[in-house]
Length: 371
Image (cartoon, rainbow, N blue to C red):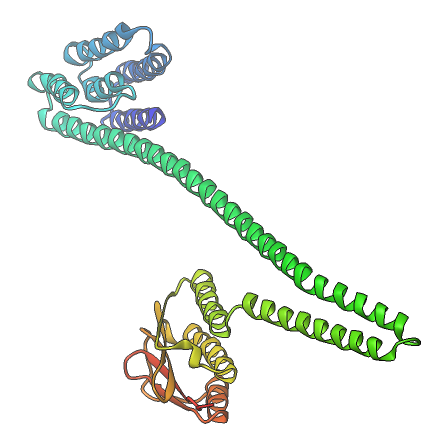
């Protein structure tokens, strides 16, 4: 802020110098005015250096300028508002008491100045300038402090988010390890025992094959039964541990929508209705492909900020709707993507419906075939 004060003081002194030259002031008086301006600027610079320790320098300079202007060099009195504001303010935040104190001080010479109107204009201009300069400087400082506080908070949020993500990844990894551990124990307990028992039966049958063929045959049959039982137990274990098809497919759709929202900033909403288990593998393929193509169309053409995807299983058919709040279209020209969606849907006996009157809506209807 100090540099702007100095710049204003220097500019005003230069203007006063030009004015003195224009009015054909005598050389002696002009030299005296110029010397006074230089002394004033030098005093201001010195006051900036000693302001924290010698308050009397500022007060003495203010009084000196007032006395010289009132009794000896009237033009110098126009520097009085600059001197008062600049030297008393000195970087402190302007409050109401200080403001009115300086206004009163700069108003006193108005009763003694020879050009009251010019002095009043200069005083008002300087007062408004320093008030605005002070307000801008401290407003900028407050904004800087607020920005720094927000940056610190943001760093804290980022750190906590990273810690949460790391903890989530660790927990997911531990859960996978636990599942693998349980699965390995089940396979060991079931398949290992079955194979061991069957192997022992076959070794006994081998030993008796040449001497007692009937007993060897019995042992071989027992080994076959034991192995068949082990294989059946393995199938049951795998069936229990394998997630349902509808659960995998739903999670894939959710993951696709979440990735789309994070990457492109378009809000996504996903809703389901009915018994999802009725959807066949072929239907899931069409649904996944149509969702992908529908999101691509939203990104390319709709200018939407929100996409709603709803999947409903009714009595006789499955209904997939992809709706956005974009600009829509007066007429729909089927692009390669829409044509592909229609072909996939028709191939399994379904129907594709497109409506662009309010946003853009793509409805996929797939018939449920009873098995």
